[in-house]
Length: 119
Image (cartoon, rainbow, N blue to C red; front, side, top):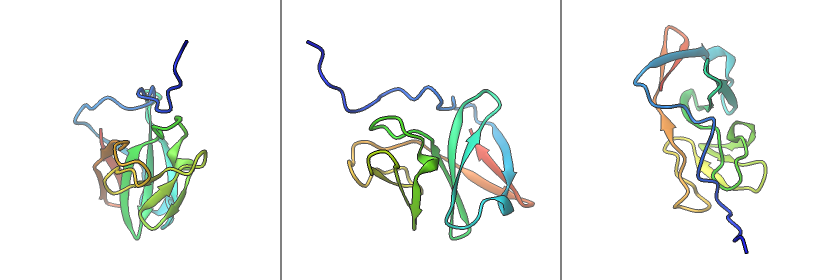
């Protein structure tokens, strides 16, 4: 009998770290208190958030069932997964619902109004 597994361990859209700074858009296009899906050239994805004028990027994948976190509601610095309500701190990737289920974070820089993410 196959056992039920509640956690997905593999994110097929998680970018491979390359120590590469990638320009993904303009800061003015992501309103405060909102998130956006960032699709990279290779089809991989990140979730980008504007929290009080500071930008944060995490993997766009809830480890519970694989929902895109960029589609969740942002409350302060916590995003709530649309599918089952798991919450993550976008500043550090920590899961507020289940502490052992963190998501990866990516450094974000704003240069001359452009959003750049270190992949």
